[in-house]
Image (cartoon, rainbow, N blue to C red; front, side, top):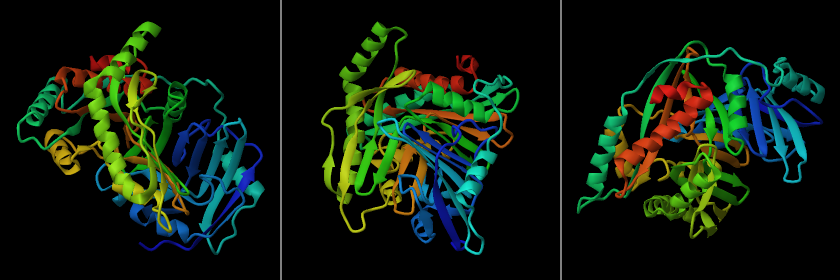
Length: 431
């Protein structure tokens, strides 16, 4: 792929707007606790497989030198053949980092052709501010409603699919240990979805998740992901898979009881171990040190709790593998695919009525040094090009001890959580 000759500049900003208080939608958005990256326009569109080479070839005067500063590429990658997807290097980008002591750092980056001068610090700041309208905090948006909900895999058929796979797993010659089976719904709305307001609402409702929004050829892929696929900062690599899920209780007592049942569940512990062992085995060849928890921890979000394990390693090699190289090796992990991988993917292709597209694919960013952060694109939605149709998808990890009814209920809870966050009251259509 031939890329234009580009150069870049990153400058520190003394102050600036809240990255989500925009009037319209940015081109790209990645917003996790402690780091926000938002970009407008496209300096260059790159295939993910070529992003490391393209980014490293763009000279950048970076006065900030923090994770996410300098030239970065962001985007959503497909579930299958992830590195065949494309990433955007924004024309203008803003970063906001929050240290553990509460200190906030802001910066802006401009990328442009080498034969044109880059903006000064003041011009860059003005370029960032120009993207923002005058939407006040708490401004009301026109309400939309779900007018029609459709699916190619109704609840009863999903239960039948799970039962069929569980029976196959319990056969004497079974080779499949775990598979994630998903189902999707498409909601038609009464009017255009107010995406900027929805993104602010997602951040408010799920403050511990990563809110993201990236363009697709036929719309926008957005959501609030709870799950870190892989992060690389220098030689430090981190994965935080989630596997094993339970609905949270409505009272403190019922919630504690529910999370206690999850922690004690042999089925969920086994499902989680498949994921942790699979990721550790894939990561080990890249590392000279790897820390893998012996037992998972409970990780609670607004409506569900999961079993989670934080895996950390020190990368070997000179240079160490880039975050995209690690992503290519790890994805899809057993948390969203299954194990063994090829058998699980074949089972998914046979059982799910439509390809997953970008659901459960990687979403995130990479910089010129090969550092970056990639979440798994779950708790997500595909807003179609008409602006008033949205597709949602949710999956459950299936093992030999799975109960088809319980797995159907789990996917229903996950679908309802996402739909309710987009269209309050919309989850009633799932009943």
